[in-house]
Image (cartoon, rainbow, N blue to C red; front, top):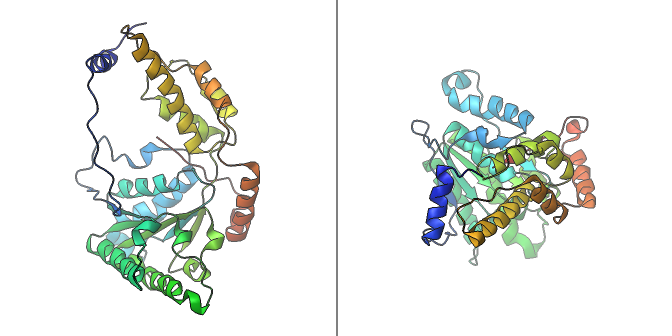
Length: 327
């Protein structure tokens, strides 16, 4: 087996005991990344080029979001602003990833907010944090403001006296969401459970579009394997169609994990042998790994997701599923 220059360099580093640099502990602060349209990173800021499948959503987002922000004078003439969106559906299908790629595609500021970012033990503290998030997004705008696990932030209000504090937090969100795009804040949220969200949040002007992100279909799964294997030492004659067939019912995260598990086995075998040969990920190894990994989302859960979809997006009932893949 011929060893490439890249593989030789990798082996030299392993033999020399070179370790990766220690990473700083991840901050609990909201993720904020400035994307510059004038000087995008050729290695990191690839936008939709990193997305496998999901062609219908990419087309919708391009026409309603990307084109509007890239042609603002013309959009203003037509009175058009990008819609706010809620991505919902099964876990592990790329909702968060796609939101990041939306920001990269346009080249705007990206802020990711999770429930812990808004948690506060002080009375009205969370309300203040919500307001500060939107003020920061406006100050650094244009900003794609992404809320992950949105149902945990804006759950249905009960009206009970014991929950007045929490109801006030939802009310604050309602105020901040109102026509946020007018202030250069483009809201995208994600949830696995839209049925838990307060209905007032889901009206147009706050959340304009509800988009169901389905499990990856055959072509998306094939593309997922192709993308994941493209940067690894792997056999050239992989039967990607067979791998996609064997992983029916697996989500994007499952497929990534399968490829990483196979790569880890070849990595350990390579350093164990220490003979200057890089062991490549093989078709047989991937198929064995698939057999040992069950899908993360059960059939029962998928049926429940479809029930929720029929409630929130009845017009999608007979349309093609929106599927996504990622590196």
